[in-house]
Every structure is written in structure tokens, then in C-alpha cells.
Amino acid sequence: MKSGMFADIPVDVGVVYEGERIRKGDMHAELGGPDVPHKFELLRVKPPEQVEDGKVTVVGPDFKDMPEGTKTPFAILVEVSGKDLEEEMEGVFERRLHYFTNWVEGFMHLNQRNTIWCRVSKKSVQRGLTLKHLGMVIIRLYHSECPIIEKVQVTFYTDPSQVEKLYPEALKVYEARDARARGLKDEEVDVFYGCTLCQSFAPTHVCVITPQRYANCGAISWFDGRAASKIDPKGPIYEVKIGKCLDPFKGEWEGANESVKAKSLGAVTRVQLYTAFGYPHTSCGCFEAIAFYIPEVDGLGIVHRDFKGPAVNGVPFSTMADSTAGGRQVDGFHGLSFEYMRSSKFLQADGGWRRVVWIPKEAKERVKDFIPKDVVDKIATEEDAKNIEELKAFLKARNHPIVEPSEELKKLGVKGLKGVEAEEAAAAPPAEAEEVPAGEVPVMAPTLTVGVPGAGGMEFEIILKNAKIFAERMIIRKVEKKKGKGEGQ
Ligand code: SF4
Image (cartoon, rainbow, N blue to C red; front, top):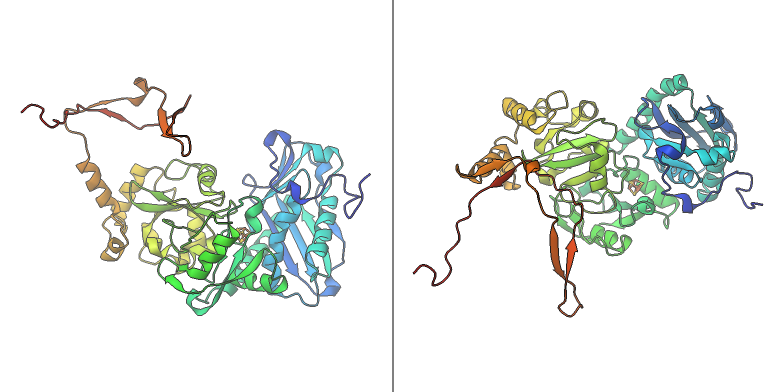
């Protein structure tokens, strides 16, 4: 028989379930996620008389009343009170929902705010898990993990019309929080904040949150970081003394480097906050969008989590997210939040918005007011360009700054679309070269020969069996044998 604070919950609850994935075949129901238009989670600080501690309300069907395979709009509203609580702490406590819900066996929670994506497993529903239980767990965890919270009540909405009705209100709250954090500049503060909450998913990931670089998840601002570190200085959100500025343009500080190095256990030693190249900020997996390099035009594309279908480079968000996530620094793939796109420091070392060539229409709408007026109509959406050829034509027709980069962009090392085309022309095969469809040419399994340190000079062969190599075209050209010394004299 189970004992402890979750004895009456029919499934296990613990950190061990964080990171548990529920595959389609094992899922009883999906709540929120990309296939439904409305979903959100929201935590509000309320006066004590408006919160009934321990109360869980379910508006709409509970798990057992949902047919297997259900996909439903979903909202979680958490209302809290406490004499020391302030409205500016809402974002930080709201983010804890990601962790608390993930601690429930058979319940998966991804993302944040209005992009939440949850699943409950068949197994846990068969064992009797309900939304009521989930609410009870959330309330008890808020009490045990955040003692500043005195009263908590939770309401789940699975009735689509109710979720839709409340959705605009949630967006307003997010926007008000984000707007509060705008205005302060990175140069005006002597501390940043770090967050390691996502290390359970990406062990080397550390967020560095500055006034002008909102956290990747879009849920924690510099002000949220300040509030969180005040409440719990030894917690997962902590103060970072920024120390000497090493590069104000790329956004590198000695103190931030030291902090990231310590918190990533040496895996990441340098971080430059305003670039997607070199030493970019790491990405965990919770990012709201990805900036990705498009070599054919020397520009950057942006794709957000809710965008369906492939981006202009032919790759969908989910595939690019796999290349970006995991707490690594990946050159040219950069996880970011919408609010960072609204910052004047947004990828400034790469050219900022003048380097961005493609973004989905919906995402563009959300940040439009923060894109320089002379560029906004020159950035393509999926309606203007669905592939690289269409993109090139659009950029040229609109005279996007990437076509013939200004001196300012050139100084950043940007060669631009015309520069790329000039390089391609110079490298074009001579006329006698023969081009054959790649699929018709048998290619042997690639073999690598490597030496292993400490193996006494022995070499090992690595054979990549069934490796799939994709080539758009294969060019076969005659190679003139170079004359060696003494040859042909
Ligand atoms: S994305 Fe960053 S700030 Fe947001 S919860 Fe994860 S580690 Fe913290």
C-alpha cells in the first residue's frame, strides 16, 4: 500500500517520471498540442478570499469520459494567494507546472503558455488517474515546493467552448507580463539570471536571462528571474554576476561564461547571447521558435512550434528541433522565444532582422511591430515562398538587404545572396562534366579509418552500414593527374 503525500493518487508521483514520453500508441488522450486551436496554462495571484485552498474543478469531460484517442482543447488555470506573493512572480510559478505535471506517472507535459501539449497514457487512466487527481498533485507540490504560496486552487477546462472563451484573456496576461519586462537594457544591470530548470531534459542546458534576452521558453523574463531568485536563492533560478564585458556586440560576459561553465559541469565554456553562430546560447527543447541558417541565400529563417508543414528549407519544425535541442551549441540553429524577437539585441551580431529572410505568417504577425519598417515587407512568409528557388526570386523582387548586403552587413561577414551565387558560378563544373541522376549510381558503403588515442597506433575501421546519403545531384568530371616530381620531364 502506498504511503506519503500521494498515497491517495492511483499512479506514482516523482521526479523519476520527468522526461517520460507518451507515444501515440500508448496515449489515452491528447490535451492541447498542435492539432487543436486553443490551449493555455495560466497562474494568477489573487486575494486570499478568492482562493479556496485545495479546490479542483473540471469544466468538461475528465479522462475517463474521453474516448480513447481524443484530442481536445485544454486549459489549466491555477489561482494562488499568499501575503508575500506579488503579481510579478506569476510567470515563475506558472513555469513550475511543467515540472509538477511531468512528475505524474503516465502524464506528459510539453512547452508552456499557449503552446502546451499534454498526453495521458492508457495505462494510467486504466489505473484510475483523473484530472481531479492531477489537480490534487499540483496543489500539494505547490505547497511543498513553494512555501510562499499559502492557498492554491486549480481549474481544468476540457470543454472546447470554455477554452476558446478564456483564451484571449490568457494572451492579454502574457502580453502584459512581456511588456512589463521591456524597456530595461542589458547595459543598465549588473546581474543576469540563470535557469537550469530544463536540465532534467537537457543536462548541459543553462539559460542566461537578461533584460533583452528573454528565456528560450518565453516564460521567464529578467524580472521573473529576479523575483524567483529572491524567493529561493538556492533554487534553479539564480543570480549571475555578469562581471567584465568581453564583447558587447556579440553579448559575452566573463561572469556569464563562468556561471554557464559551472552549471553545465564544463560542457559549455563560452556563450555569446546575441548570435546564432560560434558560441550561441544553448537550446533545451522548450524554445518557442528556431532561427535556422539558409546557406543558399546566406540568410536566416525562423520557424515557430505551431507551424505545420515544412519550412522554406523543406524541413519541418520537429526535425529542426531535434538538431537544435539537447543543451548543445549548434552553429546556425538557435532556439529562441518570441519576446527575444522583439528585442533590439535580437541576433544583432548576425544582422538582426536584416538577415531574416523567411518566417511563417502567423509568427510574423506576432512580432511585426518590432521588425524595422523598411524590412518587414521584404521578409517572405509561406505565402510568398515555399522553397528556396521561390525564396530567392521573392528576395530579389523585393530587394531584401540580403541580396546585396550593405557595408554594415558586410562587416559582419555577410556575403549575401549575390555573393553566394557568385561563389556557385565560380565553382560550377566545366562544360565537359557529366551530370547523372544520383539515384542511378551505386555508392559503396562509406568506410572511415580512425586511430584511437592510447591504442598503440592501431587503426580501426568504421563501416556505416545502410547509411543513407542524400545528394541533389552528382557530377562526374575528369581529374587531370598532377605531375609529381621528376614525372614527364
Ligand atoms: S527554457 Fe530556460 S528559462 Fe525556461 S524553464 Fe527551461 S531553463 Fe528555465
